[in-house]
Length: 114
Image (cartoon, rainbow, N blue to C red):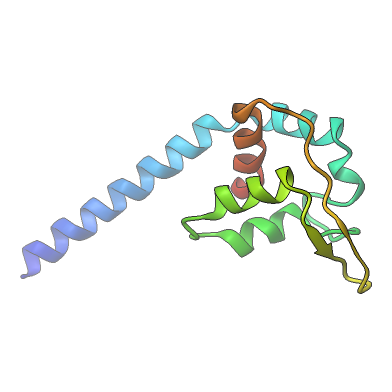
């Protein structure tokens, strides 16, 4: 039983290291920031402070370890859902202007990596 536990723990650690390395290697932070800037995302969001919308770090924390994080965030930036702001008002979330799925995934991957 002890050997089985050690094998499972080792496998879990190896998988975590692989996933971290894979995610980090795939994210191009500069390209993600350029896409965000081009789409005025920084008008409502900042990396580490709340503006009109939540910080990217708080978004990353909210979706940490959630299997559907990438899909949920891609839907958020491609379908213009209503979002409730801290002041109680609602508005349509802006749609990111790109049809390139790699750019979209890179932006979301960058946000989730913070």
